[in-house]
Amino acid sequence: MLLIGCSEPNSVESSIDPSDPTEKLPAKYKTQETVEKPDFSEAARSPLFQEAIKEASTLFGTKPQPLFSPSERVEVAGGVGFDVPAGKLEAILLEAHKRFLAKGFYLFRIEQHFGFGEKPDKVGLLPTADKYAVMAAMETNGDNYSIGTSGVIAWMKDLEMNHPFVLTGIGFDYMEGHFSVPVTNAQDLAQRMYEFCPDIVEQGVGTKAQLAAEIEKGNLYFWWD
Image 1 (cartoon, rainbow, N blue to C red):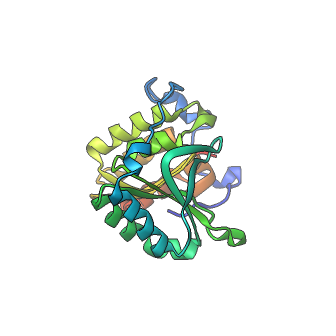
Image 2 (cartoon, helix red, strand yellow; image 1 turned 90 degrees about the vertical axis):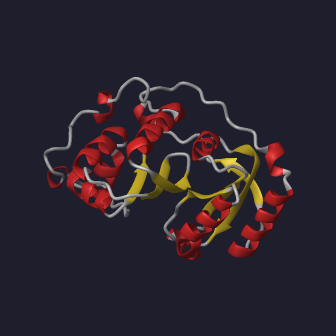
Image 3 (cartoon, rainbow, N blue to C red; image 1 turned 180 degrees about the horizontal axis):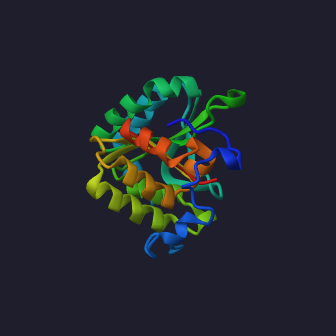
C-alpha cells in the first residue's frame, strides 16, 4: 500500500470523522498496559539460527549488526539487524520472509525509507516464528492515540481470527504485509482499520473508500504518525 502526503481538508471525503476515531475503540485496544519484551538470547545461540544469520548476510550483501528497538534504541537480546538498499529489499523481502519463517525464524523490515536520500531500509532477524513476539520486541504502538503495544497485539490477534494475514514489516510505529485470503467485507474492515489507525487514511490514502480498495487488493499497512 502506497502512502501519500497529507491531503487538504476539503479534498478528504466528508465521512472521515473530525474527532479522534480511536475513541470508539474498546478499552482492551486503547491501553498502555506494559508488555514484557522477549529475550531471544538463548534461542539465538542455536546453530540453525547462526546459519540463518550467515544466509541473510549473504542474501543482503551486508554484515549483521545488533538489533535495536527503534523507540529508545534498546538492544533486542538475541536479535540481528541488517541495512539493505530499499530497491534490493523490495525485490526479495516476501520470498525471503517465507523461506526464513519455514525454518522458524522471523525476517522482517523494521524501518522503511522508500529510497529517500539513498537511506537503506532496516531489516531484523529473530529466532522466533511468532509475529506477536516480534511486535513486543519492536514495541509496535500507536502511542499518539494512546494505543500501546498491548493494544496493538490485541487488535491484530482479533483481526487474524477472521482475516488471516502475513506481516513482512513490523516496526516501532508501522506494520506491513498482506491478507492470506480475499477480504469480502472490505468496506467494513476499512472502517475498523481507520478507527484503529486513522493516519493510514488521514495522512495516507486519503479516503476510507481508497483504503477499502487497497484491502480488496490484499494490502495490509498500518502507520501511526
